[in-house]
Image 1: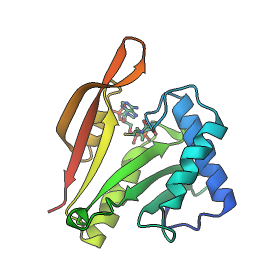
Image 2: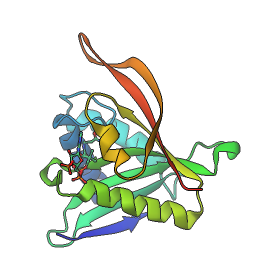
Image 3: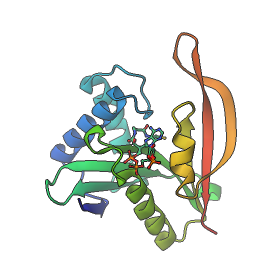
Image 4: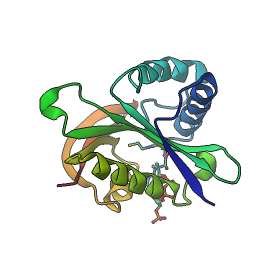
Length: 175
Ligand SMILES: CC(C)(COP(=O)(O)OP(=O)(O)OC[C@H]1O[C@@H](n2cnc3c(N)ncnc32)[C@H](O)[C@@H]1OP(=O)(O)O)[C@@H](O)C(=O)NCCC(=O)NCCS
């Protein structure tokens, strides 16, 4: 399967709906993208609208999406978030890194990170930062693409009673 990447796609109503559906499916499959399952599409829509409001051309954040060439389906996405603070303008925070559950485990996540790094280098960024939820093995997923753990706050994410997870910061140095 081939992935086709688009940076700054037009955020029309169709794409907004596709992103919300993917985000809901990824969350309900156990993904760590701002929700603890179960979550409804209506709940995700509220968060998605806030996210969309910051994305270019409306805001300084940039959206990267990937579609499967064969089916045309939205397969993966992420957002390059600006800190909106000039002293932190030489790097970006990656958020909403997700692959549709129908397509997970096929290398799409790694391909998404590779394209992300290519774009970040083209922009001349010094690095990429992201936060992940511990206990899912995500450190090794990002670690394979060169990201290094630079911080960990123990037990600060309560996903359920007696189930506290670490909030982990990863960094990809591009300098
Ligand atoms: C994390 C995610 C983006 C990875 O994408 P993917 O397309 O499944 O990943 P790839 O196929 O490129 O890589 C798969 C490898 O990563 C590992 N991996 C994938 N998802 C993982 C997860 N949630 N936890 C641990 N390891 C994971 C697999 O074990 C696999 O390793 P292997 O090749 O040694 O078997 C995807 O699973 C996802 O969208 N998850 C839900 C949303 C989420 O939690 N995002 C992370 C936000 S910080």
